Image 1 (cartoon, rainbow, N blue to C red):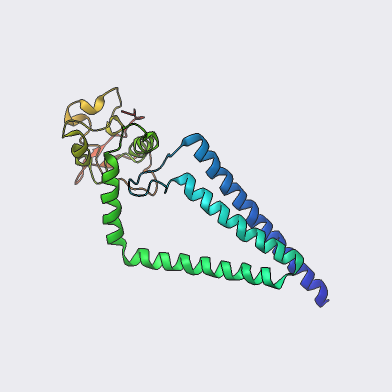
Image 2: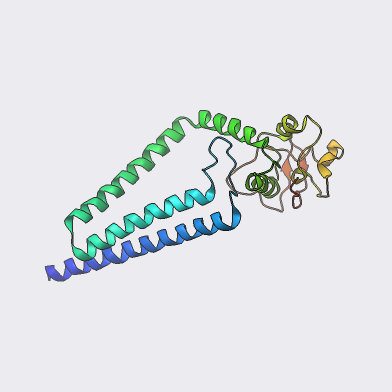
Length: 221
């Protein structure tokens, strides 16, 4: 009876780790596909260009695959050393996540200020040769999240000498609409929320309380 229970636990653990490993394969595959087809898309940081969505997915997928593989072999072979390694690695990952979460909530304001400063530096690379991924990322974000710049539209004035904003800031998209009268895009301002897009049916606020209509698809300058 006890032997049967142990066998059941062994195969259950093997199945769990196999699913864990397959999940890592999926994450790694998406990361490789993103790196191969989208270049450095979603690389918004000028200080850490390697922190692209593709690289993060590849690193995460590789780690998950390695942990799952060790767990699978340890379970099926009943190898105490591998099982101990598996649980130690899981514990370290959990402690690392907990530490990062505590530091994030403790230094939220400092992290936010640093992130905004770094993102504003990245605006100067918008539309420049060799930065197609960053340019596309900003265009898509400003359209989908219906915002303009990091804090507001004036962030782009430092890039274009207060002469224009990207076309993806326009309320109604047209070629070179960012050069038009301020009324066509000044209202399209808000702190860009990098969490989830605002619902399409909702207007959004410019400054204190100016509801406007959503922006249409962007054009890369």
